[in-house]
Structures are given as structure tokens and as C-alpha cells.
Length: 89
Figure 1 (cartoon, rainbow, N blue to C red):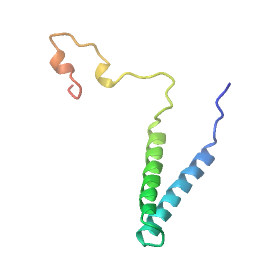
Figure 2 (tube, rainbow, N blue to C red):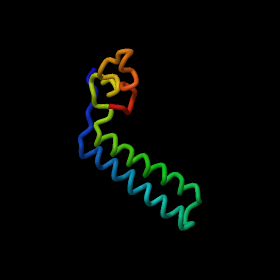
Figure 3 (cartoon, rainbow, N blue to C red):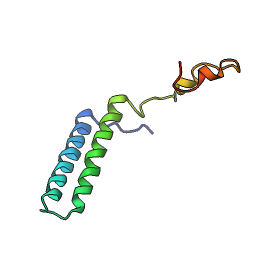
Figure 4 (cartoon, helix red, strand yellow):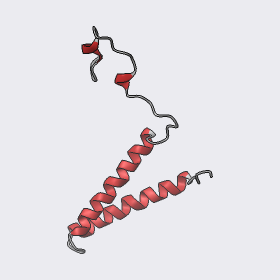
């Protein structure tokens, strides 16, 4: 069964609702219009929205085949093991 796709406009609309809703909760919780717990809920909503945007921008979860980490791209021999450590050229 094929996976249903959601249009770009619907995803963008949902993202904006999440951002604006989170900001409204942050403001209302910070000004004591609503209980203080709404501030935390707003912070979680805004953080989730920006995490979602970052994942969309970087293409996270769109790869059909898993890629190996860059430090496993080349084989290491026993004589060069020190230079094959992660973060080293």
C-alpha cells in the first residue's frame, strides 16, 4: 500500500500554526493571562517547530538507503588507525 503524501503547502501551514500557537502560549503564559504551565507548552511547541524545520532543510529521514558515517568511509589498517579516528583527517 503506498504511503499517502502531504502537499508542501499543508506541511508549511501546519508548521506556521505550530510556531504561532507556541508563540501565543509563550506570551500568554509570560504575562500571567494563562497559568504558567502554558509557557512551557509554548516553548516545547516552538522548539518542535524549529526542529521540524531543520530536519526538513537537511533532508533528514528522506534517504531510501542508510549511509555510513563519514569516519567509516575508508578502511583503516593497523598502521594508520590513529589517523582514522573520528574527527581526524
